[in-house]
Image (cartoon, rainbow, N blue to C red; front, side):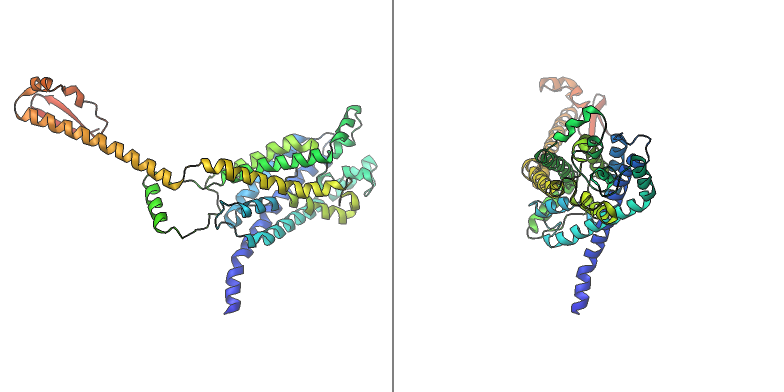
Length: 386
């Protein structure tokens, strides 16, 4: 019995972790493959091909979010997982006990994606190294390891032969850290906003509000699927925009798993310390710590600035009730006018008596209610649906 209960408890978590693994694999594989394609198959190795990399990461995020949302909510990023778990507005949507499992399988998905990219581009990387006379493991081999981990500034800019490229060496550790924090903050803010549950409207808002009042102690988990069907598009667009802006400076990591997993693969494949901890040792911790700090800051910005401005369920219900009240009052007013008209015409007073009461038959031609009343001839009243 205990084993069955344990299995029943772990089975949903196992499927959620599998979803995170698959989604992170798709994200990192397509994203790093776009970098590898631009770096190792282009005619000019010094060309950043930022547009190609931007499109690759944008579509990768869209597809990965679309694939993983039904199973796990598509965090695909340890920083996003931590931010959602610690948010006071997540409810029962993501228990903190799931954090280690989610992060582990995100890291595994990114690592396997790094393996797939290396096997796919192995011959192209070797040809690239031979063409530029690069010895794998030497400092200059950061050019051929560019797809397997982020570094600042971009290795292609540092290694460029253009005299004007030397100023890129001025990108400091502090500047790179701030950029990663800011980029992740914006990305998580978009992530939280597009996944904000949509409040019901109309009669649904009223019934939902009364039901919640009768069951205040019931705390239902938030749905995994985003309420906005365009959420994958918004998330992918956000990542694409940030990648376009940040690639020359920090390669726009924004995701510890996307950086650390492929780094491990590159270190094992022969790049050694150039990949892990990196040519600049401080770059490793910047790409691990920066996204976590930025994700928490972005989540707090949503919780304390964006979320309080949203209409609550009770406010939506109250607005609907007020609208119904106004409509009801308008209908009653029209009915009173109709009764007055009927009483006058029935008494035989005709339109002359209407004028003495300050009324005119044209007052009843364009009624905002469901029924309009018009006089087709004196003494006859016809009602029709407007």
